[in-house]
Image (tube, rainbow, N blue to C red):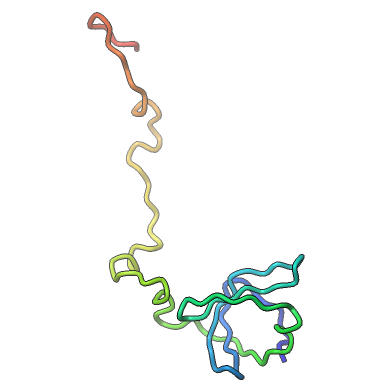
Length: 105
């Protein structure tokens, strides 16, 4: 029996079904836990079902992004942050009109 509360982002092994899954959402108002299996399938369980499951904590699988079908290049850059060169330069976004050879500035 699962005596632990579901934690978003945590991986568990369902001993009965011998499947590994990640908790992706918990809706306390609806009393539901949304899980995603390694193959990408998403399922929703109610809290009663969660409590009846025989669960073990599990480590994330080595290739847990396989269900998203990312290429090796996408996988290596998936967490990189893109910062545009002109992010801190608001003047670079202005469109200046030139009338009679004079700029607006």
